[in-house]
Image (cartoon, rainbow, N blue to C red; front, side, top):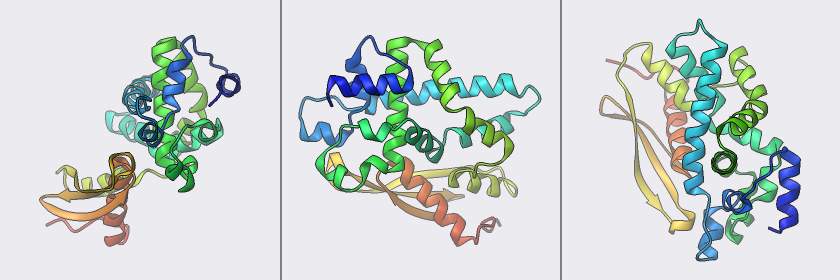
Length: 235
């Protein structure tokens, strides 16, 4: 990643960093840091960006929909910030093109993998918040997610599998779902995870993914498939 490419990316999204090293870190996948020891990856910034995104979208929906209940707002937020939604936005700003990643991740299609794009988008927000503080970051989030939020409000976005499963089960019982990682395979820079979704102590589904979030979605999807898209039997 050259200084010129960083400048092009900043110009394309209309945001400029006073500390470009934060942007470089946000665009660095863990596979790259594994192959280049001492190079910081974007996982810590992803953690921060996730929190910033949640508060901005929560506040936006709270102000926009004064008559909506807590449950309705929670559902809309989940749809607006789910992995497919964030990956869609990341593609719109060509984020994958500028990521630094290891050779194996590159060859396996990492630049187009939804989990990689969604995580990098959150990391981008974390870096933006640290460099520009909240208000410019808020403006950027509301701008790039405007279409996604509107689609969620209009019911034109399919809820993620975890949300769908929770909604189906809560029609019959308020008992919570629990997701647990039951297996991890591969080296630290290229792990895969297996998640199980449990309800009342029973395993409803399991699934694999390149991230824990991806594995949880896969487990919820299997649970829905096993129940023929209906509510798993509640006794």
